[in-house]
Image (cartoon, rainbow, N blue to C red; front, side, top):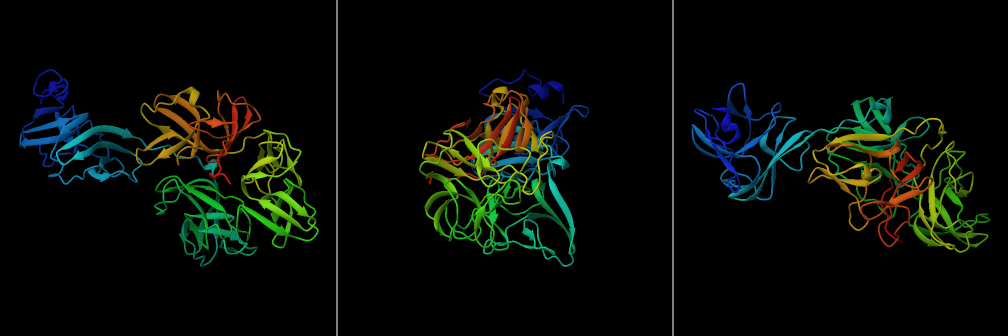
Length: 492
C-alpha cells in the first residue's frame, strides 16, 4: 500500500469532514473482525492489528472483502456494532498490558491501554483513540512496612492487625483491639508483610475503588458501623492499590459523634483533648503515645461531661482565637503545633463560642519528627495528554474518576471529595499528585500557617460547615505543604 493511503486512503488527499471513514485497498489484509484497533507498519507498508507493543492509530469500521476495508481515527462513525457483539454505552479498549484488542472494557484493571471507541448504538460508534499510560509507582521510601515471620498466621491481604505484646492478631471494632497495621502481602503460611502507612500494590483485592475502608470485626469493611468503634484503615486507590492511613479510633468502645460521660472527679475543662485508656477518659498528650480520640465540648459538673468526636459544637466561652486551628499539645489544645513532637489536628475555632472538631490522625504516634527533615510523602506522577491543569493548579484538591480514568477538581457540593493534592505541574501532559506527607509545592500561593479545607473546586481557609467538611493540608512555608487529607464528614 502506498504511503498516501496512510494519510488519506486510496491515493487521494486527506478526507475532510463530514467524511470520517477512510477506504484502504490492501490485498490479503487478513482482518476478519470490525471494531479492532490497528496501526500502520511503515517498513512493511501495511496495516496490522494492534497489540501490547503497538498502539492503535485507527479502528476498523467496515470490511468489504479480503482486499478492502475502512477505518476511522476520530469522531462518530457508522459501524455494525451490534453485529460485532459490542454493547451500547460501553467503552472498548486495547489493553496494552495483555495485548487484548477491543475485548476488554472500561472500567479496567489495565495500567496502560488505549481507549478505542464507545458504542453509541447498534449502528454507530464514537472513535476516541485516547492513550492512558501507567502511573509511576511510589518509591519504597514513601511507604512504611515490615516483614513478619509468625508460624501459621492465618491472615489474608487487607486484614487489619495489631500487636498484642506476643504476636500479631486480627483487630476488631467490637473490642479495644484497634488496628496497628494492614496485611499487604502473604508470602506463605508463616510469613507476611504488614503496612503501616503509604501506597501499596497488593494485587487484586476485590475492594471498591475510591472507597474508604474501616475497622470491622476482624476484617476491613466498606461502611463503618456507627454503633461500634470507628477507625479508618485505608482508602482504595485502584483495583490493585490501597493507601494505608490508619486513623485513631473515633472513640474506643463508644458510639456517637457526641456523647455524655459520667466519670467521678474527671477534672476536665472545655476544649481538652482526651483519649480512652481502656478504663477511663484521660488527657491526651503529644509527648507520649496518647493521641486524642475526642474533645471535651461541655462540662456539666465535676462528675459529668460531653465529648465531641466530629462536627460543629457550641462550647461556650472557650477562650481560643477565632479562625485558628488547634493541635494536640501536652495535655492541652495548642494554637501552634510543635513539629518536634507528635502532630495531630483537633479542631478549628469558628466563633467565640463554636468549634468544628475534626480530629486528625497523629502524624507520628510515639515518634518524634525531626524538624530538619521532611516528613516522607506519598506521591505519583501522572501522565495524561492535555490534562488541563497549570501552575495555578498547585494546591488544588482532586479526585480520581475511574469511569473516565482522569483526575478532576474535588468539591464540597458533590460526592467528589478529595483523593489527593496537585503539587507540581510539569507540562501540559504531566503532573504530580500527593496523597499525604510533606511536599515542596512551589508556587502554591496559600497563606503560611493556615490549615486548608475542601471548598467548591478549590482549597479554602474557612470551612463551609453547611456542606461536607474535609481537611486537606497545612501550609508550612511559601513553598511547602503538609498534606493530611481526612475522610469527609457532614455537618452535625
